[in-house]
Length: 542
Image 1 (cartoon, rainbow, N blue to C red):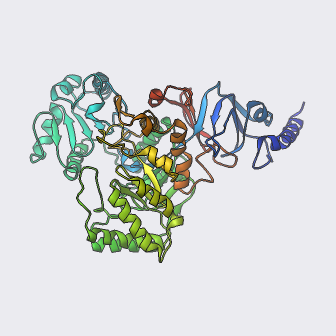
Image 2: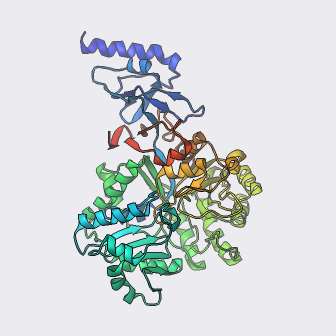
Image 3: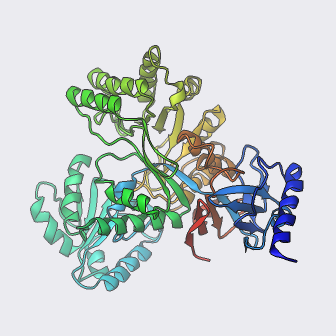
């Protein structure tokens, strides 16, 4: 049987199968790739589960059962047996401090989700042996003193000296706590005497913490060329791909130059979709006006499907920044400055994703949005309330009616807020509002999506501490939707990513175990074995 006949036969098989499979389009050529014999969670509107996917170029051209999809193959179609593994859409992180993470990625030691103190110290020892004497060892956030089941608490200088006697060790926790061994203390403490508290730890407020971090990072391997920065970005992308992340929205603003990311994009070597907010800093009436003028000058969507700028936030105005730790109200003067920028955003079609931990902050911003809408309607701009740790039901209902969305972040290394579900994920889910999951990585949270899903389905934080009661969590299906399809909508990409449907990009992840049947408390341990972006494998550990 010759190749021409095979291709003709496959075309007519595809055409005949169209009604049965519900295709959105017929195939005008044979698929390049077919993945079959799996458990494919499409995360479409019906959360359909099937067994095979066909890809042509960058996009999905068919989904269905194995027999149907394999019948579409031509002589040159590459066919991969999934061997029963579960497939999900690529994760979309709607709140990642992406560029900040790239600055450190090639060198840092991560302890995301490690619940054994002994294991952390063992990793420090192994890293010291890998680097050799005198080289600094950095752990830069995404952990908490509570997360070690064998011995909770901060690190002592003595145990860090034992783990790495010949290497300075610098361990950061958020922006205010830093643990060091003797060699690191001897180098840093004399330069920051007003912050040093003795022992192995330095504790400062968040603003001063950035000075401590800057002093420590002087000892970090410094990328002197664009090519070296591209290597750092690639290392971070590789890690994200290994976690199943295929799209990230960077809500940072002053984390360096985007030139190395742009260079990777232009060379075709950017292995995830990277979008970022407009980069400016406003902290006064004058700089608020300058920010508004920037939004007047610039196009609001400077991106394609793979890379670029759109939107503003997570701090529209840098000093309009609330917290769960204090109920001190934000001044009217600052909200007036915020309004100047938000009005320009509405006038020019800019998306806003704003930091709103307190219920009062969310309501005030929505009231401002209603006032602006009298002149420049914002409903179709998909403005988003981020974090919402202390939001109330009435406020969620109000946001839904006004067309605002909600994003929730990862809290697995943050203590529980006693007396309430925070953020109230089950209430938000039940309200019917469009909402999505993100990480808030890198410094303050782990950016492994399975950790985030575990938090909101098992109702726990590390090491195994109950955060939510049984009636306060959501299902694994709901969490997966929030980390994929819902985020695609929030990022104005619902027609291209977020679910495994005909016509969308082939962004998907193959897992090492069945996401739908693994015990709920083991979701945090699920690992990707392959990640694909636009039909190209970007991570493979099979």
